[in-house]
Image (cartoon, rainbow, N blue to C red; front, side, top):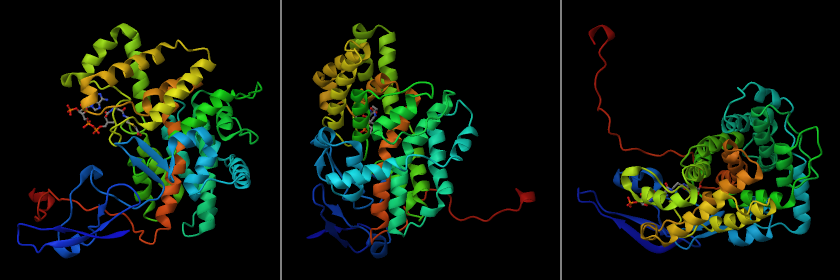
Length: 435
Ligand code: CMC
C-alpha cells in the first residue's frame, strides 16, 4: 500500500517539517498517512465533514463520482443489478466473491431459515404508540437484537460474527414489516421461507391472514433491485456511524442500530420521500404546465427550494443507480398499467429540462438514486413513511460487512477524532453563594 512517494508538511511557526508516507489503493486518489503528525509536530488536522479524510481502508465498495461509477467488490452496479439478486449481492459484499450455485443455494437456505424473530419481540413492538415512525421502531428493534440473541455477541469469534451477519440480513425485513403492520393495526405476518427474499418481504408487508398472497414477479424483482442499489455506498454517514460505534467493541446489533438512527435523517435516507413530496406538490399546483416556473424557483438562491433527487456530494455525473431506477420505474408502471402516471411524466420532464439547463450543467447536477425510487416505491404500495426502512433493510448488508471488515483489520482501533477547542481556558469555580 505504501508508495515510494512522500508528502512533506512545512510550517511557518518554526516547527520542523514532517515527512509522511503516501499510500496508494488499487484505484482512487492516493492518501497521505498523517497518523504520526501529532507525535512529530504536536498538531492535528482539521476536516469537519471529512471532506478530505479517509477514515479507514476498505475493499468493499468503490465510487468514482466523476465517472459515475459504483463497484461492489470490483463488479459494476449495472451488471450486478441485471445478473444477480439481492442475496447473491449480500454474499458478494460480505464474503468478497459471488457465490457458486451450490454456495448460493446453501446461503439462501441459511438466510431464509433465520427470517423468524424471537416471539417476544412482538411485545417490544406493542410497547410503542401506534403512530410511531417505523424508523424509530426499527432503530429500537435492531438494537434490541442484542438482548434477544445474546449467544452471538462475542465480536472476536469468527463464528459469532457470521451468525450475527446472517441474523441481521434475515431478520431486518421481518422487523421492518412488523413496524409497518403495527402502525396500520394489522396482524404481523410470519415469514414464508419458500418465497424469495424480496417476495417474502412483500408478503410480510402486504399479506393478511385472510387471503392467499402471491407476490407479483415484476414488482418482486423491482423491490429486489431497490435492495441491490442501496446495499452499500462506501463510507457514507450511516456506515461511518456503524464503524465508529462498532469500534468500541459493542455488539454488531448495537452498531447497526446506530446506523439506522443516522440513516433516518433527511440529508441521508430521507431524500426519496422529499423528492416524491416535491413531485406531488408540483402536480397539485398545476403539473406539467408549471414545471418551468418550478425550475426558475429552484435556480433562485433566495427561494431556498432545491430540485430534490438532483445533485450528490460524490457523484458529479449521472448516479449510475438513477439510470437503473428509472428503468425499474418504467417496468413497474407498465406492469401496473400506470404508464401515464402523472408523477413519472413530471419527473421525466424535470430531468429533461435540468439536463439541458446551464444552471445544472455548470454545477454538474445530475439525477441521483432518489429521483425515481420514491415513484417506484409508491407504485409498489409502500407508504412514504416506510421508504427509509426499505433503505435500512438494504443497507444492513453494507453496514454489517463494513463492521466485520473493521473488526478483523489488524490496524483496528477505537475511533477517537480530535478537535479544535474554542471554549474558555481554565478558570476557577466560584462556590454557589458567591456567584
Ligand atoms: N437543486 C438546485 N441547486 C442545487 C441542487 C439541487 N438539488 N444541489 C446543489 N445545488 C447547487 C447549490 O445551490 C450550489 O450552487 P452555488 O454553487 O451557486 O452556491 C451548488 O449546486 C453546489 O451545491 P452544494 O450544496 O454545495 O453541493 P453538495 O455536494 O454539498 O450537496 C446534495 C449535495 C445532495 C446535498 C445537494 O445536491 C442536494 O441538496 N440535493 C437535493 C437533495 C437530494 O436529492 N439528496 C439525495 C442525495 S443521494 C442520497 C444517497 O446517495 O444516499
